[in-house]
Length: 318
Image (cartoon, rainbow, N blue to C red; front, side, top):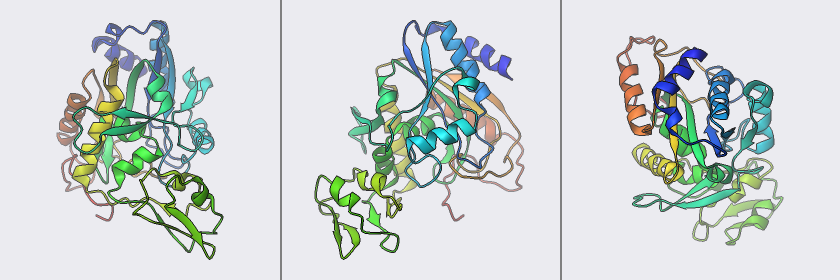
């Protein structure tokens, strides 16, 4: 498999990119602790070794999650990445959390022609790279239908505030029963939206600009995003964030269609694959790549009996 991956990259024109002395962000998903469907670090080693032979300076990277879990800040995120094999001894390169310790290190990137997003909030280390390479686990997803290159790049490269912008049509709110009234949200809010009264915080949505800083600093995870964006709009926002990440610099994309789990690797568990392993795909065009993978998956026999085609968004409760 590892030899086949290198041959695929060569056949797909990987060497047409000038990697010489360039910083290369290899964007992937390190896997939530407890999930065993995520891509093994061995694949990343093949990609990074190839880049180094071509003179580049690769690093593997991801941004912190919006939800509460094993990757919500850079320290926990690195622990999770190392646990799952994404450490310098396995990959041969450094692991960098692109949006910093608390997910606040971001760049505002204009999205030309964006309908839903005018300025994408992208992790700084990803924008510092000269070249972006996505290495994605193609799988099912409970909100977007499937997750491939666009999901890995768009949602995955967004800072915590960027992820909130994509997932939410509204503003964050406080679960008051979990709030201890510490005032950290009030102190970090630049707009006076977060206030503490009688040892409980609340957020004034008329003042809130949706930056997500209050989510990051809450020690009890009492502040939550709304997660109320319509799925079709969510997909549009992901596409516009992807454009922000790859525009104006060389980019290349690899999808591994193996262990096609029904849900995202952000889950702390995984189910049996919904179809047999299909293979690996690569392209300079992430849209064509995801379409090819979706078509290939839909041609496979189902491991789950009756099924909807991959790409059909379903609600988390269905």
